[in-house]
Amino acid sequence: MTTPETVAAVKGAIDEARLVETAMELVAIPSFTGSEQACAEYLTELLGNSGLESTLQQIEEGRANAVGRLAGAGGGPTLMFNGHLDTSYSGREPWLDGPGFKPEPIVRDGAILGLGIMNMKGAVACYVEAVRALLDAGVGLRGDVIIAGVAGEIEKAEWGDFQGAEYRGYGVGTRHLVEQGIRADACVLGEPTEERVVLGHWGTLWARISTAGPFMHTAYVPGRLAENSIIRMRNVLGDVAAFVPEWEERSSYQGRSGALNISSVRGGFPWRASRSPHTTDLFIDMRVPPTMELTEAHTAFEELVAALTARYPDAGITSEIYVSVPGSEIAEDHPVISAIDAGHSETFGAPAERDYVRWGSDASTLSRHGVPSVNYGPISSALPGPDGESVPIESLVNMATSYALTAVHYCGVNT
Image 1 (cartoon, rainbow, N blue to C red):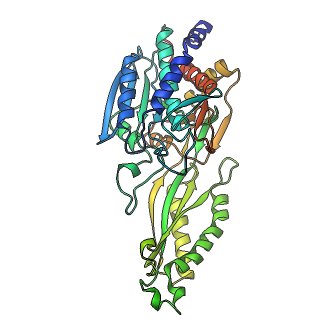
Image 2 (tube, one colour; image 1 turned 60 degrees about the vertical axis):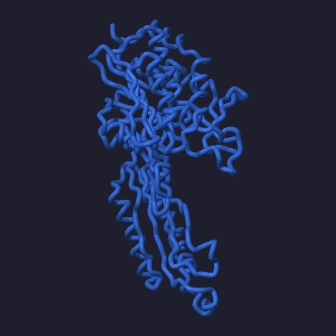
Image 3 (cartoon, rainbow, N blue to C red; image 1 turned 120 degrees about the vertical axis):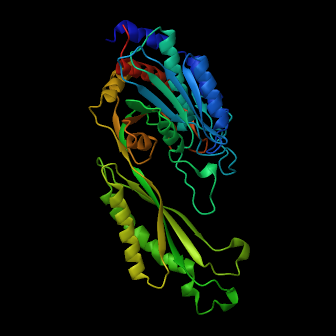
């Protein structure tokens, strides 16, 4: 049983300065997707020095997971805190020049700015501080606590000429984690949820639709422009755009519309504009609610392509699906949700609000492998503005406190 004295001891052991130092050290280590090794090595050493059994899980050259385990006395469930180490950007993009887009952390107006602090190194630092607080407070648990800092969660995928580790995302690190035997009875992922409990999120389907046309010199184009694959794509693109509202309604969930994004159009040769492109590719991202089977989304896409092919029989339409990731949902009455509510109430004074989101997370991978998972993380800059990623220090402190108390309530105190 958790006593007021235990709660007070855990809350009193949270060290803000130590937490900020950890968060800034994590941000200062560049870890763009495909290059997470150095950050994983740092976290592995930090977990070991903090009193956990730590392991560096090698995935491939230049990429690793960091895993730490705080062993319980036995008789309680195991709780995992999972966070990705890869960042959405490299920090070298010329169109992203704000301080929050660089791996050079700064503190400004009570917040940490830096690449990855929001997504999601700030939460990883909170996990470490939560476990340190438990150890410093002398609170022993019955169940184990696992901290996993993983590679390759960011929504990226190999396609065509885009090959290599920097494109291998969408859960590669967490898949390796569970396939190597790291399991838990439940998992908390500290994605930036504005301190809400995200009970469910959409999955995704990435697909290509292509048109074809003759490859010919500009001198021979007059009278044949309608055959150009880009011109043919113009019609296809319009029909796909008209399909978006239909899909948004069909894929609605928990009172929110679904989403379909027109993500990329590629055709032709900028370095040889004297030639018509033999093919033009359109790429889309269809978000799939967790209550919808992926096969239904596949069928919807195939029906769209069939309709386009029938409407434009001379366009040489081809297609493929190259990413297919399910959504994730956890039951409101799962014990880990009760534990979060208890820890949140002891930290904030009231249970956590609920939310459902269209973005994805490694909860998809974990749920598929039988680990019930929930997203619950700090306040963030949400869609980064010109300054880039930032997280208030107060939110980091509060989340570290709530994570520690969640572990107490879920894993049980060893008395």
